[in-house]
Image (cartoon, rainbow, N blue to C red; front, side, top):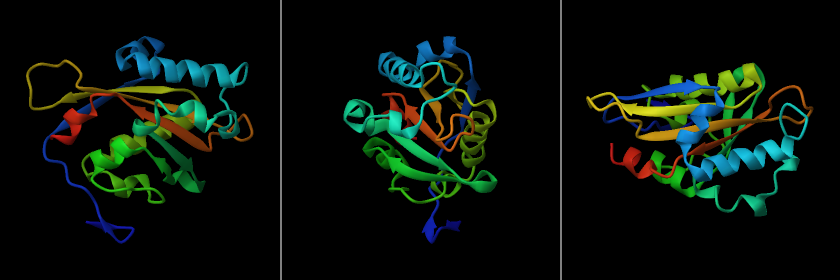
Length: 173
């Protein structure tokens, strides 16, 4: 299927994502994700979420390869503003400037969009775990988190997303 003039990636095998807003889920994301959450949390202070201006790109270097920034537009439109190099490798293209929906395989796009909508509605972090649907072993194979950003301190207008270091497993599917 074509969207934004480019082909949508395909999904070779079934993957199942579960999500939670519980900070207990954060620990499963690994030490780099915990450090990113702590950075985000320190930047927000007493506010529900930090602004994009509170985030210093120079301090973000260790997370950039697996980081994405997603603009939240009117009517629930989500567009990639920044996409880390490892995310580009995973998707097989650079979706910067494209809608989130068109960047993911048709089977997975609703799940990704749903987690972004949940961040907007809750105005809080969402932590996701991926399981391989074709394996009996239900140990998570990847983790991600989505952190809200707000220009006015009330409405989410950007989401900072981070994918765990084992994304190589995802790209092999």
